[in-house]
Image 1: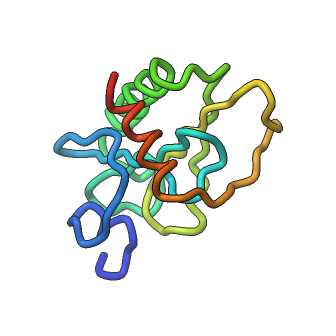
Image 2: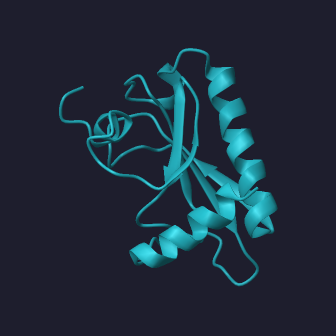
Length: 126
């Protein structure tokens, strides 16, 4: 899809903080994270909704791989998943690490580039 923000990221027309990539999927840090390490997993092929993605099981297995990287690196208490995809019409799984002092449904916040790069290094080190 021509104007899709995530399709542009897949084509490297826009930058991202890449956590994981294989031939079918890409995972990157959310630039307006709900928590430290909040990551999006997208199919490289454009689908609007998560349930439309071919090889749905493989898609979720990829999310699990990314989850394990985040758990090893950031040590959250647990992980939440959201698939609402209302702001960008491209299928995406939100992987949201949860920590001791956070609200049940944390609000997203803006963070600077330096913090995103530090989190990326931690996750990709594992």
